[in-house]
Image 1 (cartoon, rainbow, N blue to C red):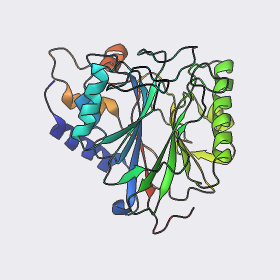
Image 2: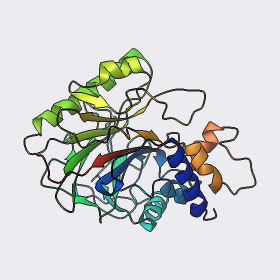
Image 3: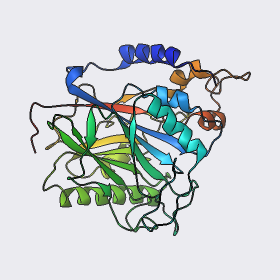
Image 4: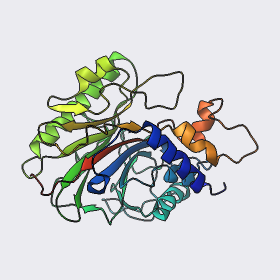
Amino acid sequence: MKNASWITGIVLLMLLAINAPASADPNDQITICSFNIQFLGSSKSRNDEALASVVKDCDIVAVQELVAPPNKMKFPDGTDVKPDKEAAEYFAAMAQHGFTYWLSEEDTGTGEKNHINSSSTEWYVTFYKNEIVEPAEDIPHGFLADDRTDHPCYERVPYAFSFRTLDHNLDFVLISVHLKPGAGPSERARRRHELSAISDWVFRNDDQEKDFIILGDMNIYKTSELERATPEGFLSLNDECRDTTTIIKNDYCYDHIMYRVEFTKEIDTEYDMFVIDLIAAMRPFWDLDTPYPGDPYDHNEFRKYYSDHHPVMFKITVPEKDDD
């Protein structure tokens, strides 16, 4: 596909200027995005350059649903990983915008097996600008459990990414999640249990660090479920349950940013959580001789080229001194 990132940049700036709430001093802030890219690494039609361009101005981007690793590496048990060309193309597109990445050491899923390049398991990856933050491996990080398959508490074991600003004025932990899908009572109960288990992990590991932020695809359908599922002491920036899926006929608040109000005062609550309209943002990139699948919306075609979730953004204000 043709490189139209300059067009998309203009479109995004217009969207943000019109719709994004005002924030504090942007020079003292970190912009963080959570983006579920459905089955990333499985579609040869994926427009990786377009998806990278939509988040290029963020400082950190947590991505869910990566189904295969981009490069040669080894699993923790010493066996070889099979890299995936389609995944590598997205990583290369992000690198073009100055991103470094932190990839989980293996995949995780609800079945009995992992170490497979398929949509039945997934990897966690977070991209970051290394002139803004660096990994902070002296505070809690990594998978929340040792067993990454068929776990009693998690459909996919969440992964904690810990970061610190280069001036050491702020450190924090992003817990990237992808909770159980489904609208039935058993699925809702499972999601509530998953969030409770994550909360328990946070409270067991907060002796040195207090700023833990849970983010990602929580598959929550409506406000009533969100109220029951949100762990005690946490608040979601998407407490209004704004739609974060590209499916126009649905109105599901799948994606959330949850934080502990008592401890994480650095969240810019005026900016809140901003949902980027992926359908509008991707339109300038379409250069095929077929109708753009966002107008009218064709779900299967759109998610093949892009995703079925909108990216969501929030901001953290960097204090003059770290408070924990």
